[in-house]
Length: 567
Image (cartoon, rainbow, N blue to C red; front, side, top):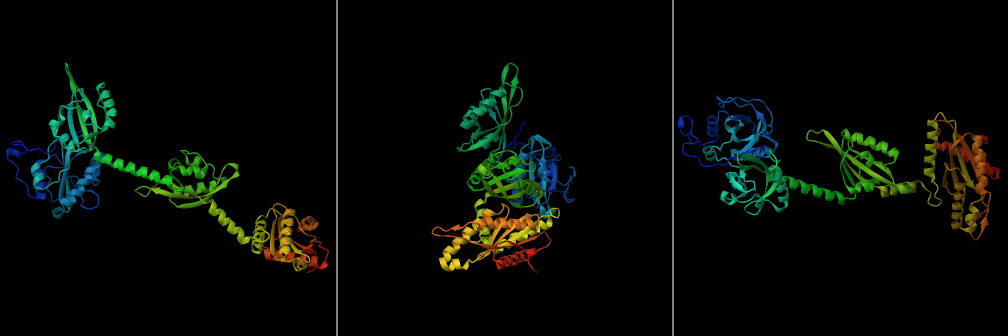
């Protein structure tokens, strides 16, 4: 692809005259500039755009004469008319025309990207409620009388041409290159290209040049920095094509496009990306961005540390160490996020040697300009310490500080939960047993040996009880010297009573060694069992308590089943 640009020049005598060689009258307003351009360029593409928002095309008003032009009434964005690289120029012209009344610059249209057109913006909203746009076709100089009279602000040239010999020495340049590099043409002709090219770009320039000399095709566009007269660097996208002549080496035609603004934008974007990357590595959380297909588009190093995995381009692999039950919940959360929902979830991550880390995962949908979800972003934070602290607080809230057993509230809560679980499982006939334990003659221990010894006895008793029950049983201290053992999945009342007798033997069958002294401790045990639906914890404990009092009245330290107690 080649590009041409002709900078404004003074006209030769007779140049630019209208029909019959009559010089067009000078324009003195923007509207008359429009009329002059319409008369002078019957083959121009003439469009109207609205004056606010974006430059979107609207029908050309009937008040504007278009005898020699096709009236284009199709509504679409003006940006679609020019190649993507020139859309920034259109935007700049749009802004200038709205503030200064008119503006122009050469651009390349999508319909003919090889040939630039002069694009004019003329603000005639006061007279016609629209802004007019003209594309004058072909390689031509701007209409200087229109430019001067309408005070059209001129943008600097972006496209230039030059010829070079096979040694890359400039033999000719158009005026645009002189403007772009800030050097007179005579300071450019006769010098090698490499004298202008940035040292870091010279190897690339030489390689592209040599490849072009060995080919009949134009070189692919290459972006090289060229030195401006003021010492700055101008980015030029250069395309070279060798032209051979009979019996001679021929020369090379170079087409050069000033892409400095684009590269400045790229550099600024790259700098922002580097800054963002550095910032993401300093935060104490894992960050990721994934598309809807589960491909990881970005992840910082902290993410792998949080999740105990190496980086993977697949999000599923990155989350591979999340505990299986939590992983199912996390997959559901990611699916909900892909549907547009904000989701926060805590998951367990399994590490080597049985270590577990709790991580808070916050995922948010990423939307494009049309509000369509295109991916998800996520933040992973280690909340193990806070989860453990919360767990410790929860344990303290339901634990007896002296013995470490459940306290009264915790005991009743666990018992009710156990009863509800049994009731919901109608296929299992097993029930729940509650064993109420009350120490016999404990008050004399406190009176004779003091409360410190009494507390020590309670601690030792609780240890004995916990070591004497099944692994799934729960021991709680209801207060003072009263304990309750919750036994789920007990087949029948006889089994519950047998468990209580075994507990009596194992927990109270041997004296308690208290250091300086040893003493025997006895206890009265009451047993209640239920497989009834809807029974409350209070009711079952009351039954076990009643059975315990019968055991205490009998004075034999033998367990008593509630069903055996008189009503």
